Amino acid sequence: MQHLKQKVVVITGGGSGMGQQAARLCAEAGAVVALIDVNEAGMQATCAMHDNIHAFSADITDFNAVSGAVTSIESDLGPVFRVYNCAAIMPFGKLIEQDNATAHKIMDINYGGLLNLSQAVLPGMVSRGAGEFISFASMAGIIPTMVTGAYSASKAAVAFFTEILYHENIDSGVKFACVCPPPVDTPLLDQGRSTHWPKMLEAGPNPIKPEEMINAIEAHLAADKFWVFHGKGAKVGPLMRRLAPGLIWKQCHDVEGF
Ligand SMILES: NC(=O)c1ccc[n+]([C@@H]2O[C@H](COP(=O)([O-])OP(=O)(O)OC[C@H]3O[C@@H](n4cnc5c(N)ncnc54)[C@H](O)[C@@H]3O)[C@@H](O)[C@H]2O)c1
Image (cartoon, rainbow, N blue to C red; front, side, top):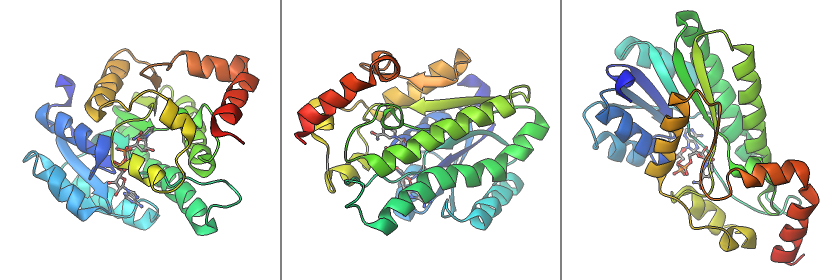
């Protein structure tokens, strides 16, 4: 992470979980970190980890607020070099039962937020011909399970959006990465657990630590890898999804019991 020294790193969702750990690690590597979040207490806790971390409150679903935050970050701290798109929510539920407004909100934050930040920050990064743009999809957006439908759809949208963004800007000098984590031990999991937690997730491996995932992203970026899969089953799962989706669905029905 040496190349981040004195570079500006923007982290949406930097008030919690993986965004918080990314902020700490980037600041320790000498970067100047700007958080964008609605979680004021979480941002204060992240800022307390290092003098080089700064909070910029904005709701990621509000394009004007996000553009305003990027303008303030660039005038206060300098041109943005790296972006982590971490902001997300994850309430679960069966698709025809989940509250309609909640299902829309999942797509607005998880996908719409990425769209907003991309349009606010990438024109500058592309015109400077340098930078690193990291999206957070999920294994849930690659391998389907039941009761995670709205979240999984939002993460599949993130993966597709980021893949096309990467190819549209392939010669721009900006690196892109699409991260598809397995379950990671962060407060996000409580949102799933307090709504409708799939038995498939209970049967799966224990969540990994956020630092482990952030370090894996760094290793993939250094190796110029666009897709970031990490953890147990990270390689086999996507392959099975492509070659034998019926087996995945059979296991889902067997485990969930419907
Ligand atoms: N934790 C996991 O198991 C896991 C697995 C796969 C993918 N992911 C993805 O990784 C990313 C980081 O997840 P995490 O586990 O660190 O989550 P987290 O819940 O710990 O943090 C998410 C942050 O996003 C912020 N946020 C929510 N709505 C917002 C809004 N409208 N505007 C601005 N900020 C908002 C929250 O306030 C919070 O601080 C997410 O995109 C998530 O979907 C997480």
